[in-house]
Image (tube, rainbow, N blue to C red; front, side):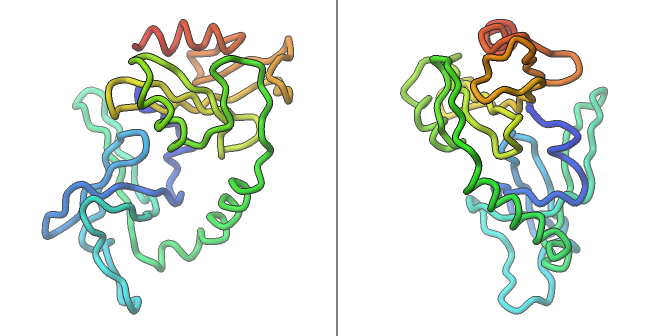
Length: 202
């Protein structure tokens, strides 16, 4: 609930962009967009591809998810990734498709004061000058029947929540529309989602 991740966003074989924040000799430690930490071990770091270099601290890199470790009792939430180009090749066509979808996705028109046709970085930039707990709703790159909700947790700290629209309508105003965060959190409209989900966490 706090991370905003699902089985779909953490599926093995998926290519994700991560931020490198620590580079010990035998691995690199990275952070996903949601704040979830990941590790790329030495054997999955660089291969013999000409020009391949070890990722640098503070820079973004790409990795393929090869393992997910979630253990609530022991407070373990970690993703293992590989940055081998050989591991990337099998999913390059999927990545290219996603990039094309991001560029050509339909701009949503939703009649709600918190909705903006922003991407993630634009949403964070907008919220930078807003109050803690303020919310932006924007289109999602995960599909036309998804929305992304970004809210300001603290200064320079934001949470991104993936919302699935059941009974999707172009304006989001269908009487049958439901806004689903996960199996336990479904809301009848965006106002209810903001009050009962985002404000409750805030």
